[in-house]
Image 1 (cartoon, rainbow, N blue to C red):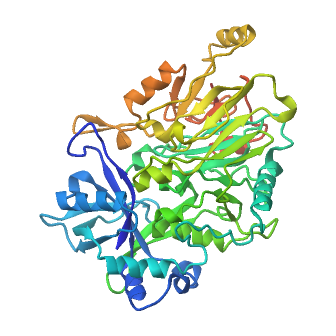
Image 2: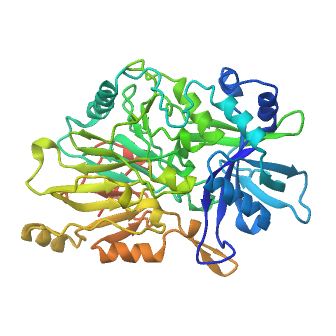
Image 3: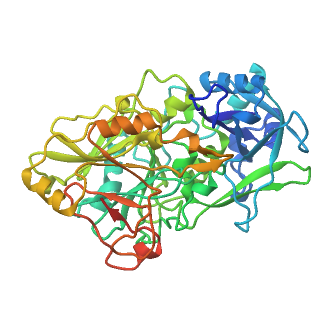
Length: 508
């Protein structure tokens, strides 16, 4: 039994083209325990290494039967429904071939075994209700419409908001200026608010590609925590719960067989990945799958070493925005979102970075990070804000509206950019490089969409893609990392850690 984590359809081709469904399945052992009356709360009390067993799969559309796709689309569109999936032992005619969403063998080189699917259909209402009852007993499970407080968080929503602000200000309030780093992670998303030495103050998403796009991962992948000043580690602000926005904290994951021959996934988080604050939207009411639950479970069992409070700090349910010294975080909301995927993308967090209060000019320049959210879902106060840099939403996927580049620039700024041959307004698209398959150039998920890039250019943006590698000023390696600045001044590492961690930045 399982959930639809994501559904990616290439609308240019009726058959689905380069589309994929990401399924998050409960391991048969877990389902058997639930049917025997065991609750999820009992399951998560096991040892850390024996956490909830899941099997996250990627199934290409060309491996689906029409009935399978109908069932998958039904579950994606209708909350509360579940899939039943049966596996075959070998590859024979009529079986679909899937791969693990979170892959990588223990040695880091071997490829995971293919997984053969013989049936996909809708679970019975009785089975779905039984699983829901078991999962809803977890201490951190959100019941629909109710948002329990994060363990270890302040008691009142106002105190909780102040605590979140303290987490951010502890890293940035004494920085005269900050910058937005967009790291090349292939088909995924990872950014950071960095200081003048290129050191991350806090991250905004920390992802990497899912297993179907390993070729997009760069040769010099970022070592995100190389510049950490332990124990005061850079927090993570998570836009939303998608694999490619948080999986950068995975050290390895692999598939193993138990004595019954059943496969299940084991994931290991990189050292110090959990022992920092994570500020994240609470989206479990949108039927997050068990793989996400396992990461959440581990975060909820981890305490921050400095404060002793829970590492995972959920965004308060009624908090619409949070202002801090260098900007504002806003909670997205889109009442028109229908599918589960759209709701997750458009109910997360976005961030607007501005000059600090002490150094803010009359015209407020801004850098916008949207995650995968539509612009229409962000209730930001744009009064006086002139956007000079953005991270393109959803890796350049199909979008209706796009942000407008600033229409205000001084003669001095324009002249300086002409001398430096730098475009005035920059948009960075975090996306993987296309791959040639059977004579056809295929983009991951069809990203970036040509029409979306055209819209950004018409809105005044010069678009750069993270797979475009050049040599940063402070590092000899070819890197695709890009930095956005509010005023055309750029950071530079004064030590060796940024280059050693592949975190050095190319100014635009």
